[in-house]
Amino acid sequence: MICEQWRDKLDAYVDGAEGDFKGLEEHLRSCPSCSAEVLSRVQLKRATRAAAARYTPSQGFRLRVEKSVRAKRGPVRFILWIPSLTAAIAALLIVMSVVLWERHQVHEIAVAQLLDMHVATIASPNPVDVVSTDRHTVKPWFQGKLPFTFNIPELAGSPYKLLGGKLVYIHDQPAAQLLFELRKHELSVFIAQETKGASSTGESETRENGFSVESWTQDGLRYVIVSDTNAGDVRDLGNLLKAVAKQ
Amino acid sequence: MPHFAKLFNFACWLARDTTVAEDLVQETYMKALRGFSSFQQGTNFRAWIYRILRNTFLTSQTGLKTTAAIDAEDETAPELATQATPESILMARVELEAIQQALESLPVHYREVILLCDLEEMSYQEIGQTLSIPIGTVMSRLFRARKAMRSLLSTQAEGARP
Image (tube, rainbow over all chains, first blue to last red; front, side, top):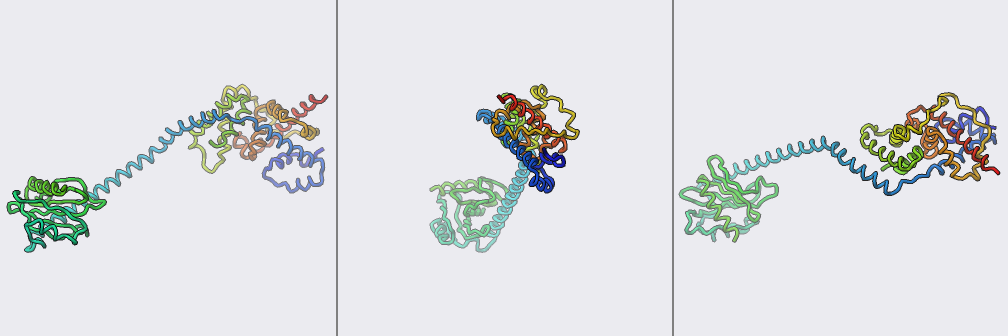
């Protein structure tokens, strides 16, 4: 017969519940009846655990639930992602706007710089470093001065005249500036290596402060023509340069 | 899927029908997914998902049919255990089937508390969270459930005697 004093504590003790069981443990050491009771409850508990682990889900059922959970999780996740997605899109748009604005700014600065260089060139008493109308003189002059090479078109039979060229620096990178003449109008052609993250890599024709500006990229080189002549004349020179660059 | 196999086992014991148990488990996971935002991180996930399963069972057709009214004795002081301890005599020769039979014969509110305690090894606090009852009720219900089980085992042992 188990002792009345400890009866209510036996289950909690067997179940490993929190509590103070020091007194009970002390009692169990000296009470065979209560010890036997605890032992039988432990045995019943273990036997119940073994007997109750009876049912196992089939693989088919597991797969079925997994499938429905996945199907459910999809839209739920999508819905949960909507705020984040919206924020991400907004952030992306802001970043893109900033990047585009910055690129625009860089482009503006680059064009302004080239305009300044062109104006400074034609205002200078020594506008070019190599003075020659012969393309076979001007082009070799750049050898060893530039990390790239380029072709100058044959201008015989065209209204354009080569005046010469000089070495310039654009964004700290060496570049060639060729000077052409067309009916008393000077045209500067800047040739530089295309750089990653350049402000613009496409072909464009713009009008900046009364100057015609045409630019394009070809074979890894960036070409920019600046002149106070009209856009058609600039374009024609551009076509000559494009044609010779392909050779 | 956490606790899948154990939830299924528990559902089978509640419903005593594997097809119904499958529906219960599937619905439990769907409900858990839908209501995951209501689960408070850091609290007991196991108790939470078992509670969903149990509530799903209780509101199911099977649950409504099989759930007997919880006896009013739950809140009263535990009765004295019978002096006889048939399990000590039975254990050596009792078959698993005998315990399974006894479990099946128990009212569902006794069966579930024994399963949560002995099979799932939940603490009284976890059981309380799962069944939405205070710890004192967990203890008294567990006491009665075990007493009823011992009584069933004893009856089986009596019947098995030549």
